[in-house]
Length: 406
Image 1 (tube, rainbow, N blue to C red):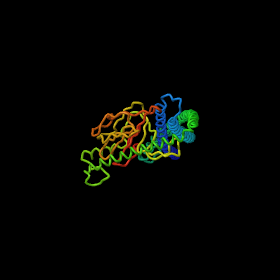
Image 2 (image 1 turned 120 degrees about the vertical axis):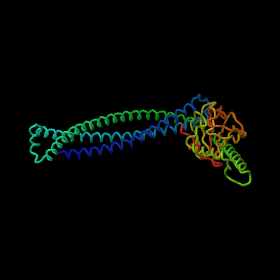
Image 3 (image 1 turned 180 degrees about the vertical axis):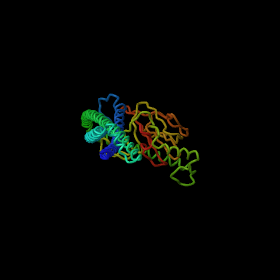
Image 4 (image 1 turned 90 degrees about the vertical axis):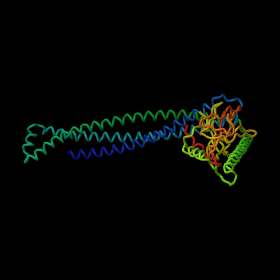
């Protein structure tokens, strides 16, 4: 009887161990999804604050559709993510329910076995029976062993009662977790219904704006092309300035694609690399509205846009800060564009485009988080944006891999 009960408990504990390990895995996945969901919610909040805080003008402009497209895209991501959470919760609830049923079945079996053990123990519990059990020993050693057996049997009985209580507590905990998961699922479903309702409204608004502006699509396409041309001009000038600085560092004796650095500049470059993924943002508040690389335009899908950096929407009058210690390599401005500041950090260059004011000059030493200018605000749209780029020598690299997640 004792052996069978122990075997049964062994299987119960193996089951519990597997259940706990699975629970940790599910909790980890759930926490990651919740964290990602919270990040997107914060981003949507920033989009509303930075791109939709001003009352829209009576005359519709394409930037309205661009901003709406961005918000719709993020909300669709949020709906998708919330659906993943709901599916995960459905699986967890179903599995937990099965685990609870299995545990309850095991408790019933163990209780039954325990009751049988107690009943048999009770029938032979008299002091006389115990005394006869001891006196019938053939030797002192056997008597000693029987005393130990009686003690172990008593202890085992006590442990069995404790284990039953333990399993009952486990069932109660699973019940609490199930109730929490069911409540969480209902909250997520309500949230999704609310998001989907607002999505429908925003998509209608976007379609109305698109219809109103359809006659101006050619003009808008031309604007995109002209912006790309201007951006390409600035990028070429940045590359020229960096190459010029590289040639100067090599004293123009040999051609090279990288800077000939002083020991101090090498140390600065090394520290810049060590801070990859930890660099501060060039503005205190902001949301990325255009990513690095070549991509379709958010509204005119047939048009391609190329960016050597990321475009960040921020607040009006926001100060622009350096992301690391360095030296001002150049302050440049083209006709029809706003100032761009280049900061050198060894063989890395950071670029801050679309400033309205500049507080520094070429050759100045700057430190991390130092104000170097002020972001430009477009009067017709009310949007304040900055383009931030990072170059390794002349090669543009994705800034999102370098700046800290906001």
